[in-house]
Structures are given as C-alpha cells and as structure tokens.
Length: 307
Image 1: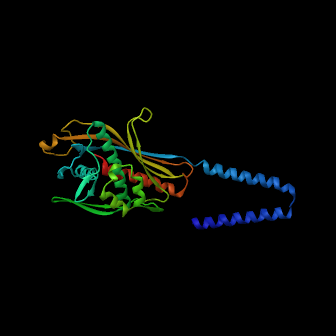
Image 2: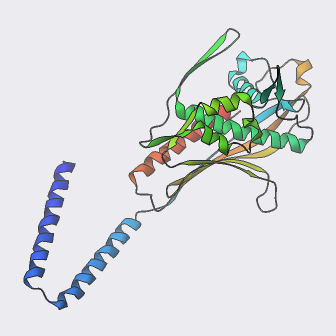
Image 3: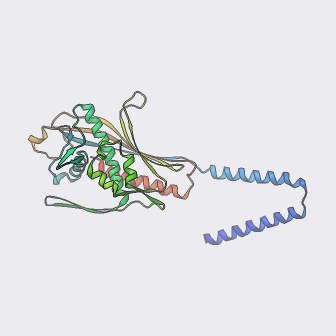
C-alpha cells in the first residue's frame, strides 16, 4: 500500500511538473521569471516551515547511587558474599580495575598510589567509576556471554546490544588515547585489552573523558564520560561525590567479618546519565534508534553499577 501511494504521488508530481513546463515553454516571456521565482521561493519557505514545525529537541535523564569501599586507601578486595551477589561482583570489579599494575622485571608494581585523605579518596573513587563506565560500555556494546564463578557459585550472563542500524568500531588503540588522562587505564592488562580490542558505537560517535574540579561555578567535582555524534546527540554519564563514611560502614546487605569490617570505609557517589537529542535531526529516521539505545544504555549501567 505504501509503495502504491508513493508511485501515485511521484507520477502525479511528474505530470504536474511536465504540464507546468509545457505551459511556460509555450507562453515564454521575460515576465514569467517573476512569478516563477515567487512560486519557487514560496515552495521552499513552505517546505522549511512544514519540516521545522515538527522538530523538537528531546532529553533523557536518569540517575542512581553507587559506592566504592576502601581499605588502606585502595578499593577493597572482599570475600564473595553469596547473599549479596550483585554488590559483591560490583566491588570485585572495582577492586580489580582500581589496582592497575605494570611488570617491572619479575615483579608487578602498582601504577597508582593509595589515597591518604578524604579528598584523595573521593577523587580516586570518582575517577575509578569513570573508568568503569567505559569498561562496562565496551562489554555492553560488544555483547556476547560470560560465566563468572566464585567458589561453588556460578553466574551466567548473556549480553545483547540494543539495535542501531549504523555501527562502527572505534579501534582499541584509538580508545586508549582518550583514556590516557585516567590513571586506571595505565596497566599492562588494560593496555593489552584495548590494543587488541574495539568499541562499537553508532557511526560518527566520539568518546571523551572529562574531569571538572570543584568550583563555585560548577559545584562539586565531576568525572564525565561523554559520547557525542555531531548534529544528532550528546550522551553524558556524570559521577559526583555525595558523602563518605567512617570506619566499619559497608553497603547494605553485605556481610563482612568484624576484623575486616573495622578497616573499611564506604564513599558514595551520584551517577547521572543524560542524553540530549538535537532538534535539527529530530525527524531523522536514526533519531528514534538513538533514543532507544540511550535508554537501554542507561538502564544497563544502572543495573551493573548501582548499589
């Protein structure tokens, strides 16, 4: 039906254009240029008004809370708790990413120093969560499956990316260049992973890591991961510190022996996910895909990173 209507419409347009052209040729004079120019200009203006009237910028915003548990100034390695699997797996990921090492001779050496003050702990955690966003983004976009096993507990997972018609791989070495400002990319394991990896994103999308220090203009410190496709969208994941605990406080539901718990501190962060879809391309067929993709991405980040 749609194809038939299109054929009828195109045929009608061609016939009308042919008729108008024939009349102009048969009745040609210099006086015709004025009316023709007016009609053409009016048609262009009408087309612009018709298209622009339906364009509207749209925004998506979601948020959640997360935390980093510290022990001795570094993310804590804790025994897996089968009664709190989600938070245990999340903290295990942070502990692994938050202890980058490089091989020096026969010894693996940390490339980061333990945080010593509360300000250092907040910044350490914010930067670590920023790197985790990129880490999770790569896993989500590549899809696939995984089975994680801790002791006698196994957790299978299948990752299916949201559908976007035009996807292009950003080579891992190029992604690594954008991660150089983040201290947690500085490890032999992470460099190897990126040098032999890739990050599939909508065609034309760039990734940028941003650090905004505390200021009167911008407020608390922010660590931001920005995905941007010119003329189409800007997607940001913004990490902002909320508060830190004294010794012995851990995320709810997690069980830790008292002799370990007394040395733990928990620092909490607000994560805000924002997407702005540009007005000028609001009617483009790709925009609806980008909107659904952003909503899916935000939901997945919340599931993997929230407490």
